[in-house]
Structures are given as structure tokens and as C-alpha cells.
Amino acid sequence: MRIVFAPDSFKGTVGADDAAALLAAGWRSKRPGDDLLLVPMADGGEGTLDVIARATPTAHWRPVPDCTGPDGHPVDGRYLLLPDDVAAVELAVTSGLPLMRDRDPLRATTRGVGEVIADALDAGARELVIAVGGSASTDGGAGALAALGLRLLDADGDSLDDGGAALASVARVDRDGLRPPPPGGVRILTDVTHPLLGANGAAAVFGPQKGASATDVANLDAALARFAALLGGDPGAPGAGAAGGTAFGFAAAWGARLVPGAPTIADLIGLDDVLAGADFVVTGEGQFDATSWRGKVVGEVVRRAAARRPTATRRTPHQVAIVCGSAAGEPPPATEIVALAELAGSLDAAVADPTRWLTAAGALLAKRA
Image (cartoon, rainbow, N blue to C red):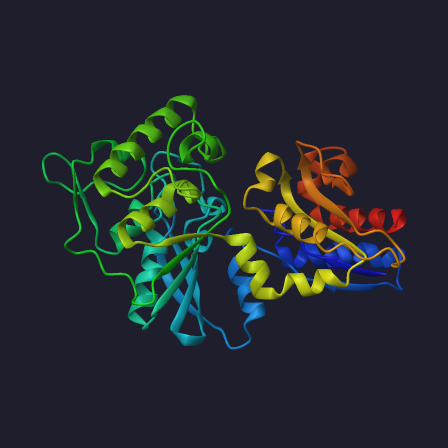
């Protein structure tokens, strides 16, 4: 049998590369004769640059030391220079939630990713691809845009502090010093389809994951609405709420195009060709839930695998397994779920030893094949 392993990262525990390798090792322990293909995936969130680098042999890394982390402490940034002067930037590298020492939903900032983008522009980038998943903040991208020269002023004409809560005091947006976008334009890789505002928006859906209380969510949503009214743009656009509204900020200020990350990455690595010859596909992510079907790796892999079922002459039916840390939902037909929390006895136990339980999940799937 030919088995394809195409997981996303298991955020905060294991990257996509390691997840694919561990699942494959477990499978191989039970079925050593199978042909195993490892195709780690990403959707614009954590690990996206690693996947792009693997698929682009001529790419090279550029470090950006001493960037502003999401809580204000310095962090080291980096980005990829691709052929044709395209720079690929990953928000999670400098502004991701795991970088927070303590969650601070009101003051966390995206300033660091703006500093990385500024370095890419200085290096001559003519086009930008920005992967925006995994953010710690809900600031509408204001911090990143401030690092690029946008000034957000209160009623007294003073510059605002960083963070989403400060946007409640914005009275004027000064674009005079804002750096122009690169001539080839900007693509934002989003891993969600949520708008900026409202019950399905950035603050309401993702704020609690970043430590926001119900009061915080209401205040952040109102602050983002005020910011959007002054900045312009379309807060209702699908994906505008990605990364705490960072996608909206760049679309409004720079005319960036919002594109779904998972299909973009899948096309880049040639996933369809790999799936065409597969007997079984294993994908995965940290948390499987309703959002898994809206712009995430798991939904994209399942859809593409289902569209490429083998003919009746193949030895086995084409099936897909979803391995996840925990599950809150049912899979589609011909798809099974293996939750590491169930294998380990609890989610805490699974998170404490992801190597063991990802390997165990691979072995379990091989035994069932």
C-alpha cells in the first residue's frame, strides 16, 4: 500500500515535519513493507515557511534579530527570499501566541511582523506573501502597520500605544509616512474565513483562545470597529478576521489580497499528484472542530483526497484518517478520527508526550488497515 502523511503542525507541541515523521514511524512499526510518503502541510499558520522552504530549493533564509515580540520583549525574526524577489513572511515567527510569557489579549501586538516586512522591503522584495495564522493579538494589524510608518492618533494628536484595546481611542489615521506596498503586491495567506467584526469575527471567535474575557471580547470588537471605520476597507470580507484582524489591516492599508492558505500551499507542493497514487491518507492537527473545514489543512486534505478516489480495481478503498490532539465533531464518510487525548487518557497526557502518542496513533492506523 502507498500511504500519504500530510498533517499540519500540532500547535505548541510538534511541527508538521515531526508530526508526519512520527505518524509514519508508528505505521512502519506495524507494516514495514508499505510505501510511505511524507508531505507535511501548512495553511498560513505556524510552520508555513518551513513547508515553503522545503518546496523551493532555491529559497534562502534571512534573519531579522531583535524584533518586537507580541508582549514587547525582543524576539528573533526571519523570512524567506524566494525566486523573482518574492519574500515570504510568517507572522507566528515574531507575533505568535506561544511567544507570550503571559497572555495579554488587550495589549499584545503585531509590531514584530511589521519589522520583518520592513527588512524584506529594504532587501528589495518586489512581492510579499504573508502567512498570518497563530497570532497572539487582536490589534487589526495596527502594530505591524505602525512599524511600517502608519500613525494612529488619539483626539489630542498623540500616538496610541500598541494593542487592540488602544484602538478604542483612535481618532485619526495618518498614512503620510506609511511605506508603499511592493510593486508586485501582497498576498495574505489566511487559515480562516471569519470576518473582522461581530459574533463570528476576530475578537469573538479567537479572542478567548488568547486570554480574552467576555468583557475583553466586547471591548476589542468595538475597538476594531472604530479602527476599521477610519482605515476603510471591507471588514466583512471572508478572512478579514484572520490573525486578530491583521488580514483586514493589510487589505485596507495596502490593498493586500486575502487568499486561503491551505489550497495555496497544497498547490505549491503538488499535493494532488501525491494523493492520486495513494491507498490511504493520514492528516492531522492539534484541535479538530468545526473550523477544520474552513480554510484549515485537514479540510483541504480531506476534500482533495475524496476527489481522487482510486478506481474499483485498486486493492483498498481510498480512506482518510484525521489524527488530532482532541476532537469536537464528527468526520465525513470514509474518514476516521484518532484523538491523542483518548489514546493517552487525557489531553494533558497527550501534550506532555506527543512523540509517544503520535507514534502510537500511526501504529493503530496501520493495524486497522
